[in-house]
Structure formats: structure tokens, C-alpha cells
Image (cartoon, rainbow, N blue to C red; front, side, top):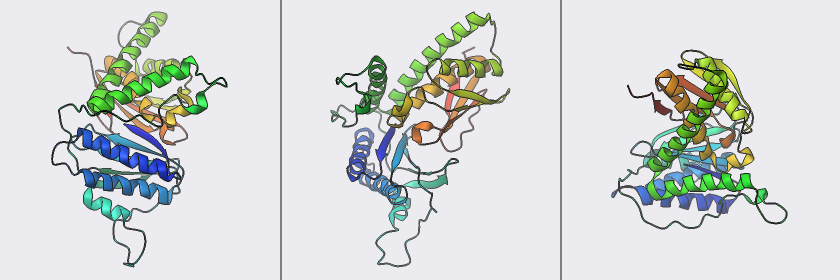
Length: 317
């Protein structure tokens, strides 16, 4: 689950803090520390405001029993300081100290092309049963205002893009992160499968695709929808790709969850031809990186570093 916010806008920061707290409350098991999670999230957002006022993003990974929250920014970076300030009367400097005591695994790292990523595991457990709580109307729902035509209408691409994003986010809000990821992964696998079939037919390929052919297919299918992917390396162990332009354009920065479609398309194709695959989205235009960097590990071995790898099983039998 991904969110974009402007760290110079106090209203946006407050709204996002409330939205994340409500999301945890809807899907958390009884006894979870919702106030602690809200406090930790608030301090992580405040840290971005303090060190990097400007565009920022939040990624929530709830594939494990407890959710990990990451905050990405484009600031100059900072030193992770979890101790109290020497001056007890100091007005600031306690935020990350607080986070370290109400959440787990607090970590910070510099992004390769600039900016920082700060993450922590929230003190809430996921519950299994479905939540039926109604959702408030989203203020930042797509299509984005800047996509409107002068006559106040939206084009077909804007409408279809908004339809995909809003459907995925609604599934996530109603049924939880697992359901949304499963839905997006299934769609990506189906679309990638059809594209692979046509690639094979056009080139009369029988049998498994080689790593070089898989990489070529990735580049071609992304180019067909406006991406600018290129191959950095491709061998029996992994395929590494860069990307200079997102097919979704600038709107992807407001809806970074669209990246999940890329990992499922790439992962499904690789898994069918290599007996399994793990996809790591190391860098993403969607969270402020100048380019994307995607690593597809062939054979199913999970080797994620910061972002969690998305794993795909090979064909049964």
C-alpha cells in the first residue's frame, strides 16, 4: 500500500497520519497498540517534514503479521539519532527516540540517487476476519485534477488508469493488503502470460525462454505501453533492468502501488521459464528515484535487501 504526500503541507501530513491510523485500526487484531502505531507514524512523517520538506512517499508492507512502514523522501539525508538530546529543554530531537520505543526494527538508509528511506515495524497484529467499516471518500482520488481537459472531462487513458488504481485501493481497504496484492498479482500474471504467448508466436519459440529472451520480452512489452526499460545485465542467475520513463507518467508518484503490476508481470514470465522467480524493486520513479531499477532473481531464490522481494512459483509438476 502506497501513499504520496507533500511534506510542506501540514494538512496533507495530518490527513495521512489519520488515514494510516484508521487503516491499522480496521485490520488489526484485538490488543494491538493502535495509539502506539499512530504515534510512530506521526513521528516518521514529522521527521520527513523536518529534514526533507517536499515530495515524500509512504509504503506499507503488511505481508508479515505486523506491518512495516517506510517513508521515502528527497532530502539531503540525516544521521539516525535514537538518543534523547543532551539539552533536556531542547524543542526537538526526540521523534526517532520515541519511534524506537513504540515500534521495532527502526532503520534508515540513504537512497542511491539522493534522499532517504526510514522504516519501522508497527506494534499491531493483522486480524483475519474482514472489516465492514465504510470508507471515507478520498480527497486525492484519481483521475488527478491536472489530467482534466479544458472542458472538464477526462480522456480514456486517464479514466482507465484511475479505474485500475481505485479498484486496487478499494480492495485493499475492504479486504486487507493480502487480498489486494493477490488481485494485482493475478491480473499481472494473466496479462504477462498473454504477452508472452504472442512473443513466442511471433518468433516461433518453443520451450523455455532464455534469460536474454526474457529480458528482451520485458523491454518490448514495456516499450509498447510507453515505458523506457533497458537491460543492464542478464544471465542464468538474474536479470537487471533500468527504466527511464514510467508508462503511467507522473501520476505514478501519486499512486506508487502501480509498481506492483510490473513485479507481477515480470515475475510471472520469469517463473514460468526459470522454475520460479523473485522480483526486487530496488529503485522506483514512483517514490522519487530518477529511474527504476528492477532485479529479477531466477529460480525463486529470495535476495531482497530493503524492499521485500515478491516471490513467484514455477509451474506445478
